[in-house]
Length: 355
Ligand code: SF4
Ligand code: SF4
Image (cartoon, rainbow, N blue to C red; front, side, top):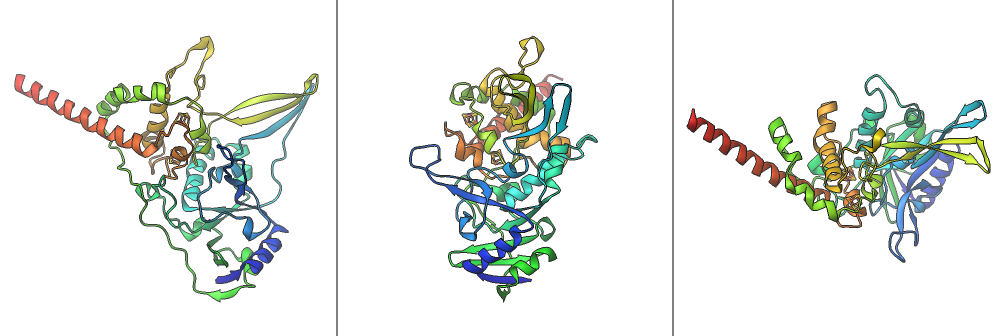
């Protein structure tokens, strides 16, 4: 059923749902942005409809609710340890189509991958119901249409919502949410999906192994050696990045008591791939950039066989302090691939002439 609710009715509905669910949505944090006097928009618990930022994309993705930047995984004291309990209440998570697609990608990586399910991911994910936030096309960094992540199916969400300055339109797919929203007037609302972004990207053709090998050695990656400062901001803001490390934190001056935390890690930061003996496979920033971009636009798909790992949310471009754009990088990669293919075709012709 679909309903039209005023702001007051939406607040009443959220209050009713908060008795059963923790409700998370993008929220504005004034003056906590990267530059002075700028705001940051990130996910947090909300209590009122007016808390929810719906007219601009959040700086950080919905993944922060499911895989937070840090979380305790167990507590220890001398010989004993206890696993952390994790979240106990179900979660309603307001998310745009790109963020819902991103969670399908994270689920493929974290749940059942190679027969192993990440317990700390699964215990939160199984409690989450999505409320789809209709998106009007995002900003000038978005390219979800190119990535095929602009639309989702009703099976992917429990309700879909269109915000308006004076209230919201909602369509429920889950009977558990019906009662809370039915205080609104009946409506014929059905969510619509963006069909065009300001930005587009051509997906690279990397089927040929010889082309992939040549691309890895292409000089295009060297431009990032100095330009990328290896801060990792792009991967923290990325809707789909999943890498983490662990850190032990001890309490006070007792090294025998503390907790082990799971902490977000970034393939863009030096030392990420360091092994015993100080060996690093990607010691230059350009090599780390190549690894990230190929992971998003080839390797994930080669592993899972379905879609690319990038959902086109544009958050990496938006957060990069060096203005490195993922779409511009992919287009540079496409130019390098065309150059490599032309070179390989020319070599083949020369071989044919000599046979
Ligand atoms: S690589 Fe960039 S555009 Fe793609 S999902 Fe990650 S943050 Fe979004
Ligand atoms: S691409 Fe940008 S955000 Fe990512 S590590 Fe390099 S400088 Fe930082």
